[in-house]
Length: 143
Image 1 (spheres, helix red, strand yellow):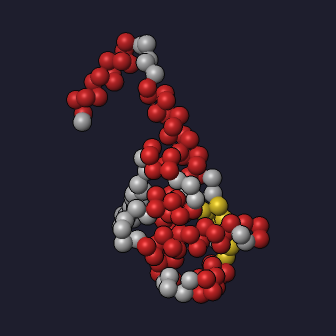
Image 2 (image 1 turned 90 degrees about the vertical axis):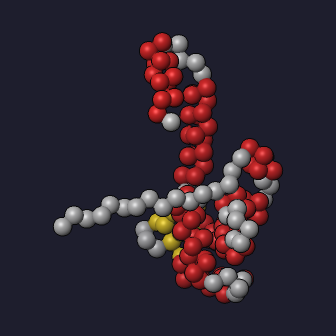
């Protein structure tokens, strides 16, 4: 029997040059990650997770510690909402689970954005090779 492959779950974030330029604090960052109007609880969970890791010893936080902080700081955020926000943060690369025990900040999201900026810069430069230029113009046919 054939096993099903992993399905890729997309996570949409709202990012444009103006929003990036206006982002000043964790609250603004939460609006970039959860742009929907009805995502108030998810933004709160994002801030809770972010600040919990930021101010923990060694910048590491276990899941039970995170749940205890949720009960202490903001009881109106449900455990399910906390898990959803944590899953989105892990999926886009802001945090990562290490050794299956604790959560910590990851550099994957920042590296991915830098990589994207470098690729955009590379694509904007004319190639100079007529064969590759024809190949790029040929991409119009496959839209």
